[in-house]
Length: 357
Image 1: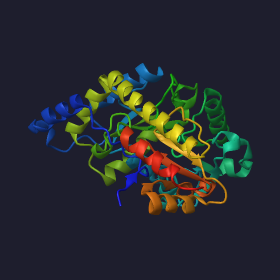
Image 2: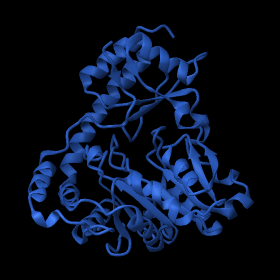
Image 3: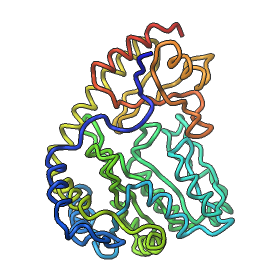
Image 4: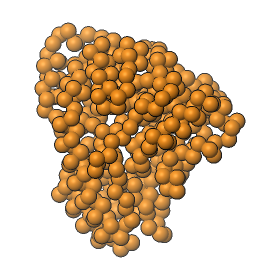
């Protein structure tokens, strides 16, 4: 069967040519063939800090408040080893990227799950967290724009998070890897834009989604200097840093980002509109997302998430991700990734229309 895979969040678009050209040049320089710095090249960290000022109006000290990562996932997994002792609590949203939960478990911590539901805009309900739990928690995880729900958060929510963190002495770990994939004039914000956020917060970012560089494994962490220092201590014992040639390509990306990202977002916006229309024509209730390249689609009664995903695969050859794979509140949804070209997405919608719901 000819399979159309809308399951994995791996961009099908190529890395922009200028970034590839810089990588070719850098990889041919013998100076880049040695062990890199654990925390990242000074020039790469400076480029990250410059980009944060340009993009979010957030000032960062490249030496103490920025570090390179071998992809954001690596830093997300390792931060728990730095700050979670066996038995410590971490506040984990669900449904969510699984590494927040798994990293906590690997460190011996105990996840306290925060359900993300439609009625609350897929934001965690901070007021529902028992006081005793909030006081014991070491970390709280956030991810906006969100995977898998495509939800976004506003400044009032982030201010509430910062207040919560200060009150309860909780570190905020914000995965902001989808901040550059946004539509219709919407501009996602950084947690660090909120006054006092840098006292308690660290953000994880990546060039994977913004510049179609998933296989390159290049990311970075920014924020509280003690959080950066703790993460650096872990990394110095488990890896040997990010290949310098990749960092140099990352500098090129960060300093030439505007045109690339704008063109990429235009492509995703067209794909979003094709899929939203096609799914609505097929009988699904779909809300067009403001950001990310995901659609979070309610499953019609009486299907479960797995039931519908199974039918779509076995009957029409379309792969989607069952929502419950991201956590129990994801039951009743499927996630579709806009990581196929327009022709294939149109074909996918035609196939889906052929199923009688």
